[in-house]
Length: 269
Length: 250
Image 1 (cartoon, each protein chain N blue to C red):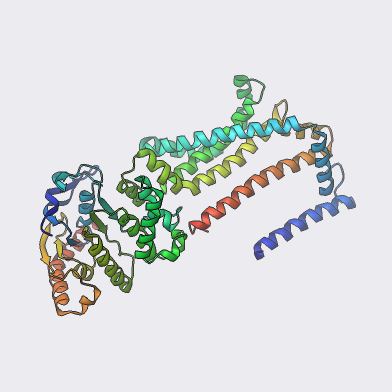
Image 2: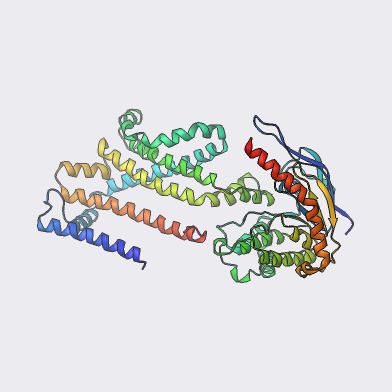
């Protein structure tokens, strides 16, 4: 797990705004994600976490610096082998669960039998087999998010980018989904970058957690959790987990206050 | 059967029965209206005689051309306006005010420009329907979720496949509303125009029967038009309900 998979070198994002000062949202950020690593990013609201994910995914163009995946610079489009799961429900409401999951495979021209096999595996893995013919509107929010995760994982990406995928779920479901995610990570060996606002989620799931500053987002510190690879949600009851979550909060508290002050000032202007 | 559906049927049957009784008992004179049962018999005789087949074909052909043109042009213009924000800012007030324009007043001008044939009435039907399609296309495109467009990019989809596989299905409920309105407005425009200066078609025949005090033919044709419009709209409505139910929108 020592080989570099994703390298960010001085990545900066500035948004031009009509009749206003440009908004410096992110960076400069230097970061190396090792192959097969589970890396989480936490930070105060509006610090540029999703901007960072968009930059790595190739969904937005960086103002300065460069993102490299497997040594190739990312240039304005999503590179092959990269899967993204978004915070908002991105299931296609006009397709059944199985058609949603098969969408990307069919686009890639994978043959029918292989599509059926991989979709069946994904349905089983995500506990959705009984809902294969259901439409997303007939599912709960958590199940719809599982459809989106399955739709991404079925493509067997080497790099999985998750933008607060469990944000809309209750605490128990989030813990269980976290367990499922850890299982998937172990099985696939993919590199995972998880954006989250939940410190416990970041502390429980990740090998390393990057704590970002208030805007413009930079890494204040990268905390190593040192969990074993076969961990699960039961680690939340361990003293080490409490210490890791406490460290994250200590780093984040002042930045969150700063972000709230920024927001209050912006609202009064 | 749902209570609302049952009540709807009861109200309709009661209304038709009341008109039937009023006509049969002489409360409504025969010069004013014939009984609904007579309308049905008269319509059957008209259809069986084949006397009006040409007019029916003429009207329905004109409606189909107006409707097809309105759906095509409306969807394309909606897509273009949506893609160009400056054009959108210019077009929005015009589209909002469009229905205050009585398009029928242009009918004489269209006759001068296009001749005394079916083209002016097709133009009127088209003009009534096209705005509905344009406005609903804009509504539909406005409501395509940004996260679905991001998902399309994640799947490395190009413009054409994003439009076909994501944008159109996503906007479909609104496009469907546009199609339903376009059918209704095409009928209104075409049949209405036939009343004024046309040389044939169902509207012309209804007007002719009216001036000829031929209530049997006039009411039979009104019943025919109502029947066609109701069948088309109810079929679309049923299809729409199935689509909406899948998306949890009904």
